[in-house]
Length: 248
Image (cartoon, rainbow, N blue to C red; front, side, top):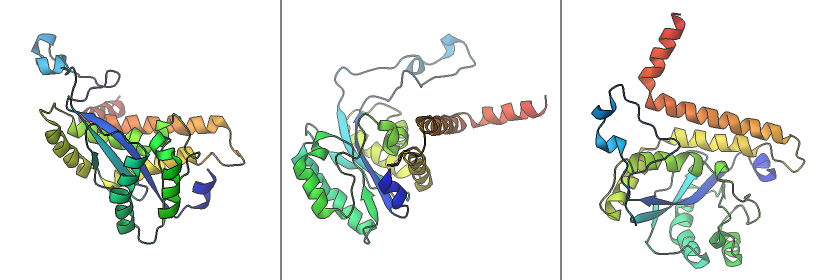
């Protein structure tokens, strides 16, 4: 991308919305439970995942920055649809004051995806009038969550902690989201944003690299991501495997 290539000193502010549910988070593809005992010895809460028919949910607007700063969670009231008017209110009341406080020199560029409320003409005019730099409506490619560190890193980290167990009410869920939010380290956020930059970097106006290199960067990014998950989940097992390998 031309802008990223020619503004290396500016901070990229990534934004995104996510729904959190009061049910415990479970991923059918990725979540696995390993047990050395027999099936009868495994607790029922491990073998079975309970689901509510119509669970309560909490919508959150998040901002993370390429220098590691993280904006506190911005909760959106239940039942509110984020149209252009609601989104501009969020920009005026929450996002813009936070950016002015943490970046008084306006050395940032604000990223947003292609949601209708973001790309509306009056929203674009508001951004032009109030934000120093921002990515316009035609800048962010459609259907590309893997380019946003909120999607491929931050939301997963928060959900893993906040939604480890089911919650009786949305207010209890909000409290755990705040706790999980504060637990994410700035260094990890900075690294995740740098990973995003490695994917964006090959795309320049001259298309000086091939699609194969972009795919290679993407594959390396995912290998590093899943290896870090294994390190966090099974540190003792990894140490044992390394010990056995060195003594073979």
